[in-house]
Image (cartoon, rainbow, N blue to C red; front, side, top):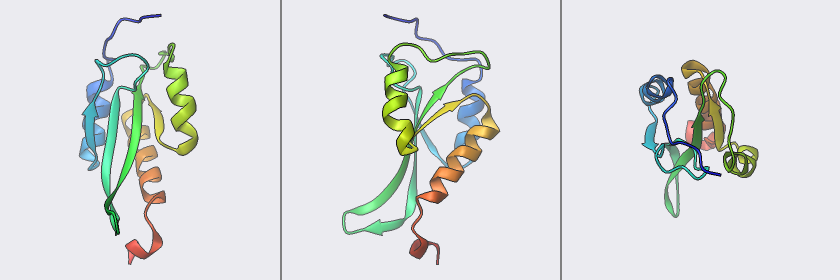
Length: 112
């Protein structure tokens, strides 16, 4: 089933808040096919043998009454258990959830 590709009314507000919190945002809104609206990334303070580590999280932006459609449920089922997916409805709640997940990925030795 194909749904009309469109931005939710709170998209700009959430994106601005996430960027202001220091995250980079890749806009994938027009991709469709169940792919979340945004990919959020931020470097982690730890570096490994393989190089810089990054925090990654998908954002599915929804209005207050919006519901997941079609393949969005599949993407959620794959990435939410890994703490890499958020259904974003409110800017501050989204930033809080991202910060909580980001800090949980920081290794204790990197915090010294």
